[in-house]
Image (cartoon, rainbow, N blue to C red):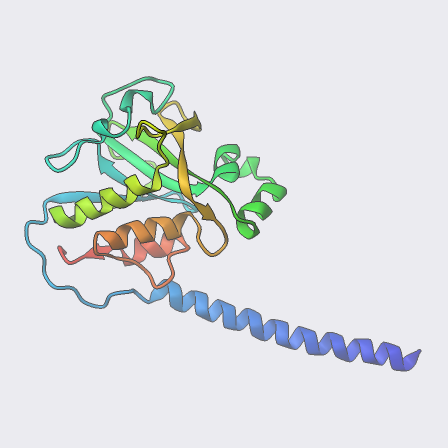
Amino acid sequence: MKFTQSFIFYVFLYCRRYFLRWCIFSLALLTFGVLIPRKWSYQPQDNCNLDVCISNTGIHSNIILPTKNYVFDWRKYIPVEGIGIDNLNDYNYLSFGWGDRAFYMSTPSMADLQLSTTFKALFLPTPAVLYVKGYQLIPDNLEVKCIKVNKNNYLQLIKFIQGTFKVDDRGRVIRIGNGHTANAGFYDAFGSYSILRNCNNWTAEALRQADVNTPLWGGLSGAIMLQLRSGCQ
C-alpha cells in the first residue's frame, strides 16, 4: 500500500513538473507570437489614399471599410438595405467579422456564453459565419485604428472578404440571421473555426492581403491592433 501511494505521489510530481514546463513554454510562444511582427520594414508605397479601419471589442476584431469609394461599391455586392432589420440604406461604413456560426449567433454578450458552444467552437470543426454591421460614422464606443493603403492592396483586401462569403446559385450573398443589433446581420461563410484559426486570425489573413503588418500569430485582437501598420505610414 505504501509503495502504491509513493508511486502515485512521484508520478504526480513528475506530471506536474512537465505540465508546468509545457505551460511556460506555451506562454513564451504566445508572447513571441504577439510581440513579433511579420514584417520589420516596408518599401514606401505611393498613392496611399484609401482607409482601412480595424475595431477591437476586446475579443473580436473587425474590418471597417467605406460602403462606397472610387475603388469599390459594396452596394453592388451586398444588399445594404437588408443588412439589418432597420432597413437603412445610407450606411457610410460596413464592418466585417468572421467567426464560429453557433457561437457568434448565440452569444451577443459574455452573459450568454455557454460552455458547450464554446467547447465545440474551439475544439471541433464547425461552420463559419460573417457578421456584417452598418454604420453612419466610425464607431466611437470601440477601440478603432485606421491606416492608409493604395488601390492595389485595397482591392486585394476586398477580394479576400468577398471570397469568404458563400453565395447562392445566382451569385448572391446568403443572409442567415439577424445580428445582435438592428444594423447588423449574419451571412453564410466559408471556412471552419477552431482554436488554431479564430476570428482574429481571419482578420490578420485579410490584412496581409493588403500588405498590412500583423503579428506573427494573429489570434488576439489586441495583438493585431499593436502591429497594425503599412508601407504607407
